[in-house]
Length: 298
Image (tube, rainbow, N blue to C red):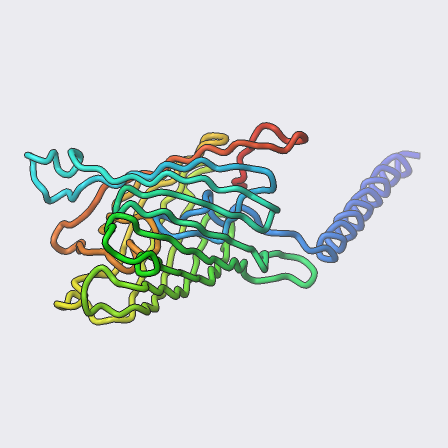
């Protein structure tokens, strides 16, 4: 009888353990049989200046204000650049979860810009996993500061293939092959067509804070008489609070659209030509089923 009292609980425990293992194995098989999308590769539709693979959710509107101050090496008289400011104000709307459109206006060169983004691939795990997310970007704009130019000479066009991968929960990297065409470049003798390659990344410090950086290499001779420009390099911090995303950063680019920060960056980090800047975005939902924007980070 004593032996039975000892053996019976042992058998029950063993049976329970086997049952739990079977259940875990079954759940694991079910997970691997389904494709699970990877979310929140970046917090925002921007890495710093450049676009990220992220798009706005369907029926969500993002109101975005971007500021760039003067150069830090301008001295105390200019309050190290804070006395000078350049701004872009824009609106971005999610037509679908994968397709968004945007419009903006910059004080620099008084540019009106328009763009669209379409996510063609989404990184996923599980069955038939996809290793990267791919988003197509296309934009155009008109610089209205020079009234003497013909309208077609004020136009520019840009196109990008944004390719990104999220490595675990903290690290995300992105490549941005870029095509930029200016009907009339700002500097006489500069090439109309400019090819560039951007690389950007994000490292998550906490659920709502991350470090971001990006660099755009342009395929032309740097700082010549015909093109006195440098490559754009930027670093910053992203802070998310519900429907708001604050991006604080340092960059050698004054402009905030592709024509300007890829094609017309006139300063260099080596000489202290660094601008402090920030982006502030607020998302509004027009989806009756989801009025309150939620954090997208995971």
